Image 1 (cartoon, rainbow over the protein chains, first blue to last red):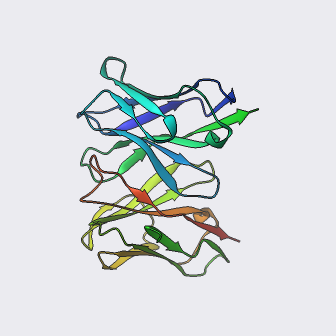
Image 2 (cartoon, rainbow over the protein chains, first blue to last red):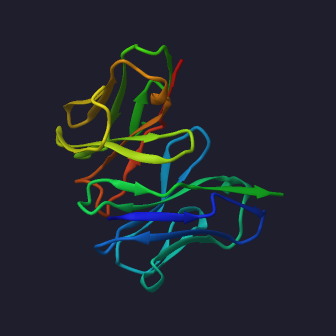
Length: 113
Length: 114
């Protein structure tokens, strides 16, 4: 069965510091993986997705993620955090039938000045 | 123009009442979904419709009934509301099922049952 595990429910960084949000997946088929961001009281917005075209995926707002099959990981990074990056981040994998997203429990990113 | 719009945004109601949440998408997508986000922010699929046909019906009480009058609309009706139904409900849409395609989410409906 498909699943994702996000390590760390809360990550705090200083403005300008590296952001690293961890996601490990379990999948019985080649996975489609996603990172979504949720700002307070808003819906989810796609940051980036992995669909097997390239292992290093670049997304919006300077975020990127690297698919590592050997480590079953899809960690999200950003070289320099901005205050506006403070939000909830969700890693997700498509279910086996490709008909819905299975989400991790989310990681709250706090950015301090 | 909002791509996926839900109404209402907030809904406060008493236990035992029946309520509906409406969702419309103007993206021309074939597939629409309802997700539930609980108080711990955990998101879980409830229903998925493709071209007005039910594709996914996760383990959800039968008090919840989705209705898709056409490809652009997917409404959620909830009977006999319970305290545990309090959550944020998100409507989403995508082209031809999730697969590798992006799902677009509405702003959410925060349901509070008192």
